Image (cartoon, rainbow, N blue to C red; front, side):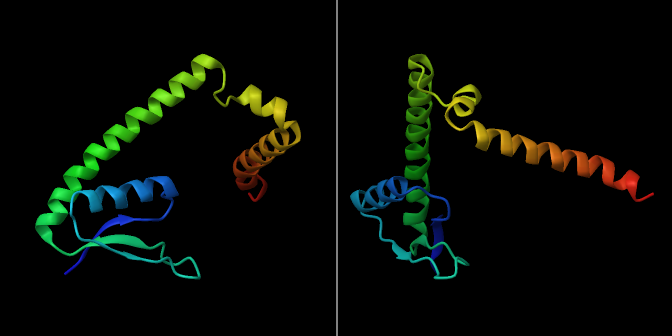
Length: 120
């Protein structure tokens, strides 16, 4: 019986392509299900052989460690170079959006805290 190896919900396209290439390059047989048209299922990568699944999980752990290291290095480089996204940068680029989001957050907090007292 096939086991779900990777649920493709919220997986970036480049990562899904990397995982497919990883499985193919290591001769691991898999098949892919497509997402449903209504968004109920996101699709996934499935492996039938239990031995291959164990090997694929080990390969995936190595891949994720490399990807995590790369993402952290890119973030650190962006921070050093001043390219990293910050609150101040967002405020400068989209002041109305940021002010609107903050106003909604404050409104939710006020309603959450005040509504029970108002209903007493």
